[in-house]
Amino acid sequence: MTETTRFRDVIDTILNRITKGPWGPGTLLPSEIDLAAEFGCSRSTMNRALRDVTEMGLIERKRKAGTRVRLTPLRAARFEMPLVRADIEKAGAAYRYALIQRDICPAPDWLSAKMNLSPNSPALHLICVHYADDRAFQLEDRWINLTALPLSATQDFTKIGPNEWLIATVPFSEVEVSFLAKSADALTATYLGQAIGEPVFCLERATWWQTSPITFVTLSHGPNHRLTTRY
Amino acid sequence: MTETTRFRDVIDTILNRITKGPWGPGTLLPSEIDLAAEFGCSRSTMNRALRDVTEMGLIERKRKAGTRVRLTPLRAARFEMPLVRADIEKAGAAYRYALIQRDICPAPDWLSAKMNLSPNSPALHLICVHYADDRAFQLEDRWINLTALPLSATQDFTKIGPNEWLIATVPFSEVEVSFLAKSADALTATYLGQAIGEPVFCLERATWWQTSPITFVTLSHGPNHRLTTRY
DNA sequence: TGTCTCCTTTTGCTCAGACATAATCCTATC
DNA sequence: GATAGGATTATGTCTGAGCAAAAGGAGACA
Image (tube, rainbow over all chains, first blue to last red; front, side, top):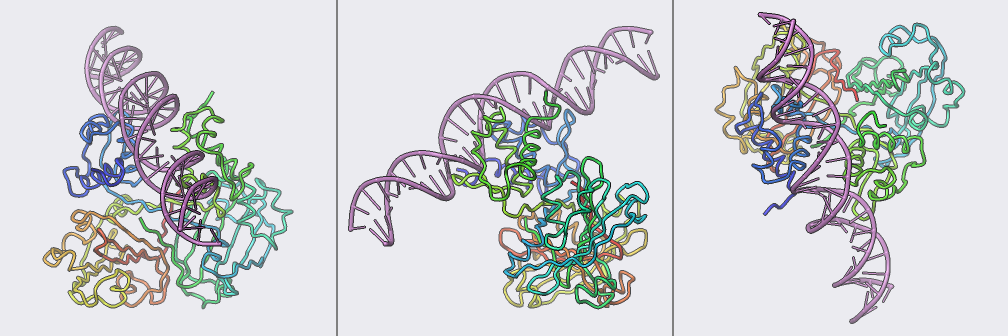
C-alpha cells in the first residue's frame, strides 16, 4: 500500500538507484514505457517523475537518445529572493527606504560590456538604502538603461524604490543572478555601517527584456547576512 | 496558430496578467476548470501551467481555497552546485586534492545545536583543499557524524575527497544550504593564499538522512569567486 | 454560543490513448 | 565510400475522464 503518491515513490526509487543502485553515472535508463511497465504505473506518471528528477539535475533526457544519468550528478538548489521589503517585514522589523543619490550619465564601460549596451548610452544611476528598524539592511546600487526605459527618468524614486517600481512596470524575461563576497568600499562602509575592507555579501542581478538590457543592480548586505534554502 | 507549446503559451499569458494585467497581488484566480475553458485547453494542461507558475514562486495554491497571486511576488532562482572536481575540470584546469587535517573528537556545541546532535557525540573532522592547476580553489572544512556513519572513521580520505565519498555512499534526503560572506581566518588565509580578514565566499551545507544528521561542511572559495545562474 | 458532522468545491494525482518532434539509425543512391 | 533521405524510436505534449484529499462552509445539536 503506498503511503505517499505514486510519482513520489517512483522518484525515490529512481534516486536510490542512481545514488546507490545499479544506475551509476552515464547509465542509459530504460525507456519511459519500459519503466512504467516495471513500476506498474502509466507513462504519464513516469514522465512526470523523470521530469522532476531532470529538474533536480541528476539525469539528462533527449528525444530518441533516451534518458541518461549525468556524469557529474550536480544538485540544483532553489533560492527564493523576495523583495527587500517583504524580507524585512517578515522578520518583524519596520521597513524604511531612502534614496541616497540619483544621476543621469553615460553608462560606464564595464556596464556596457556586461549588458551589451551601445557605448555611452544614457543611464540612470541610483543608490538607495533599505532599513530594517533603522538599521541599514541593504545597499542598492542600480543602473537603469534609459534608452530602453525612458520613463524611469521622470519617475520619482524618493518614495518608492526602483526595485518595486521596476517589478510593477517591466515584465521580466531574462535574468542573470550572481552571488559573491566583496570588500566593503567607502560607500558601502558608510551606509551599511561597516569598516572598509570588511566582507560584504552581494547579489548582482542583470535583467533583459527581449534582448534589450533593462537594469543592473548590486545589492550589498550587512554583516552576517546569509541566504538559505532547504530541500 | 501557436508557435510554441500550449502550456507555455498559457504560462506566458498568466505571467503577463500577473505582472501587468488584471491579476494584481492577492487576486483569487478562477478555478482550473474555468481557466481551462477560457484558454481552450484541458484541465491537465492548465494544471501543469499553474504548477509551473507556482514553482516560479508567483502564485500559491490550496485545495478548495483556490489559486491566489502571492502578495510578495518572489522570484526563485536555481543554482547548480556541481562537484568541485567537475567545476574545476570544466574550466579546463587540472584538479588536485589534498587532505590537510583529520581528527576524531566530540562534536563542538555549535555543531550539535545546528545539526541536532546529542551532546559530545563523536565526529570526524576533516580539512581538505581542492586545487585548480596548483592554485588553491576551495577549502573544505567538514564534520561527519560518526554515530550515523561509523564507516567513515576507517575510510582513507587522502586519495578521494569526503564529498565524493559521501555522495557515492549515502543517499541524501534533507539538505540545507547557505551562502554567506566571511572574513578569512588564519586557516583559510593560509590555504587559500589570502590575507587575514579578506572577504571569502562561503557555502555551508548540512545534510540529514531520515532525520539523522550526516554531515556539515563549510566550503570557502578564493577571491573573486561567484555563483551565477540565468533564467 | 460553540462544536461537531456532513457536504461541496478546488486542487492533486493517475490513467490510457493519441499525435508531435527530435534525433538516431539504416538504407538507397551516387 | 560518402551522402541524402526515410524509417524508427524515445521523449514532449495534449486530451478527457476519473478518483483522492484538503479545506471551507452549512446545518444540526448541545
